[in-house]
Length: 248
Image 1 (cartoon, rainbow, N blue to C red):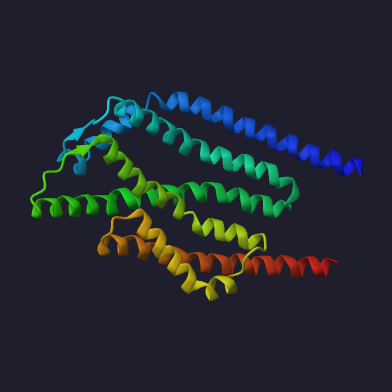
Image 2: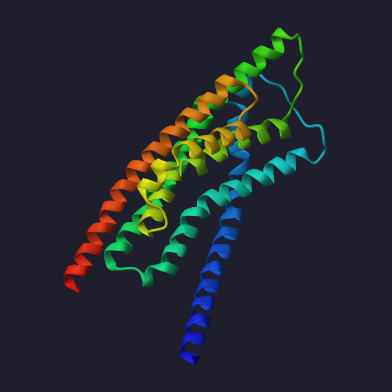
């Protein structure tokens, strides 16, 4: 009993140590991000979509709020691979050697998918939405006075969720390898998953059909890719179980 309790305490101590690593790493990166946030904000302001708009600060604190927010986001994005690595290092002692290599490879794939999601939203979806909204305001004879805080809040609301949503194949693969879900379950749940994705798309896009579909269709595609990935992972799980039974 005492050995089990010590084992639990050891695990808690290990987790605490790795969380401290993550927090310290984040704080260091956050300080460094303060030097890069200004350049990123200016780059986004000089982008084609923003050049035609006049940015205004409606509150004295808007500039510092935007500045700190971007520094935080930069630090969070840079820290995320380190966080995933620490999570992997925490659970890896309980995995087989082959499983360790496979799960470690999830980290760069996850980062790449996050960047693809951000890029898709910023370079394809966001310009379309801004152009559509500007054209609608012009047709309705509305003079748009754009607040810098509102502009960047809208930009982040539209782009960041895509970075996380594009993680779906990696998450599905991981859950399949753990035996939590199966490709059969994903196939049977397709219509419910599509409905949830439609709701998610509606939450992160303006109430307009075309932009809604521009978000929904890629999400449906991601779900189908996730099913394919799950099938491959599931076959590997079955193969590993058969090999283990034969050895036994």
